[in-house]
Image (cartoon, rainbow, N blue to C red):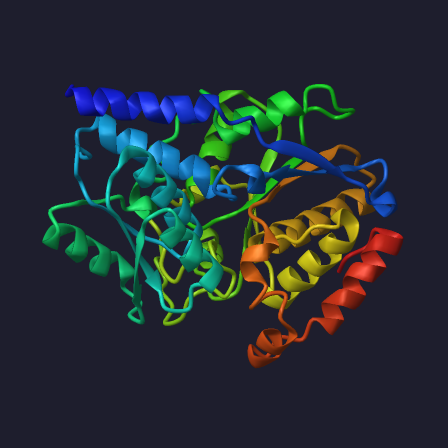
Length: 351
């Protein structure tokens, strides 16, 4: 191991030691009592999203495999949040960073990447993977390839992964072993980590993955023998994919729920009134699915707890998910879901 790699690993470890764990927030919804609902707030990472964990793991994996060396240009294909976090770690190590992203990526994320010294390579082609690989090869760099490596770079048995963190924080709660953990999938790395951890620890907790519109994960879950593709991508940045990513493992998922994009956005607008905070669209996808599970539990007379993710802050999406003109241009009607959510908050029922 070279002195530079030794120092790079030390810097990443030091950065981790300076960071506290993310909060687990109880969300008060009287209509579903005594069922308890919690949000794992990943927006409090230094780079503001769940993808901070993934980026750290990808860098450690690349360094320990000898793929990242002094001066290596790091290239990633990303819809935004992973690129923000990777730009942070690239700057920490003094490495050039290029993000290959869809041209529709929010300006706030682009600004954050450039703030950390990264470059943004915006493309209109659907195949950002090939574009990123070609760019890395042309620069003699390393293509991180989060969509392939996300499921393997994190130790799913523990070692401070997100699943271990959730269960440690739940230890003193009324129902410390959740009935459900609800996540959405972009790479599939988080769902793979949590699903494997649940089985390894022999917990009775079940894993639900929420999928937005314009994503193939749900269809692949229903029939794993197929690998469907779509011509368009998800409007909910960071989750949903037009192809089945190598890191998505349907075998560790117990249930998938398809969530309409209008429901996701209506849910983050409701959440703002409950927490006095804005959250990104993927949080709305997660939470709407969690609401559905809570409603099913109540109807069945079940008690217990449900944990889901607050993936990132909504300030990144002021020009989209919190912009009525953008919502109208997308042809999204939030009114029916606003009514359903109001009914849920009053009765605990959500059809």
